[in-house]
Image 1 (cartoon, chains in turn orange, green):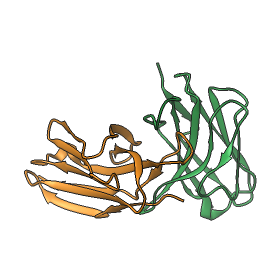
Image 2: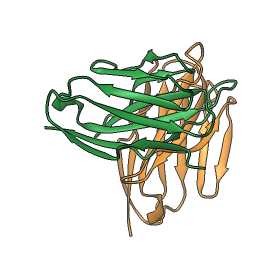
Image 3: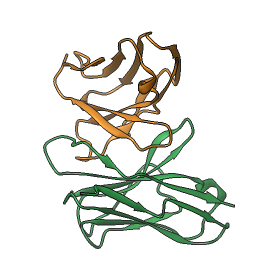
Image 4: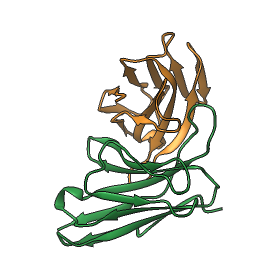
Length: 113
Length: 114
């Protein structure tokens, strides 16, 4: 089945530093979604990327989808303590069951004040 | 508008006991999912449903059964609980559409098997 590899597993940064998490697949993806899970909470949808080379921004968060639609990244500029949590990518590859997503293992972000 | 509601929120079971986790959504979503989340393992799909009366196996279905008798409800059953099933269980739902739609998650059920 589809595998989505996400790195790094953990990232510790000081407040104000930047943060990036990467998601890679060996197959071409139809789209990719990003979720955030706060400690003790549930995953919350952030964004979906569909087009090759697509870049979307949400305030300090920048999401990119690779030209070959096999990788994606989430970059946070000038992290804040409110950014703490685990960030997951999730993908639906071409030909797979509509609606079914394959989640990466997540990147757990810790921000020191 | 409650979204996705899971009951119970916490439960402790003894090995061999059975129980059912209930998931209810009020968004009229076609698709529903059950995941388990273990440290360092991300979200693993147990079973899912693409509509009322349908179910399908996910990545880790062994030891679990599901039913979708009503569109708004998705039940996850453990027939004979084992310590390896200690986990946080999340239910999610999504609408039908071209490509994948965002999944909406419940607050989770924290299950411990002793």
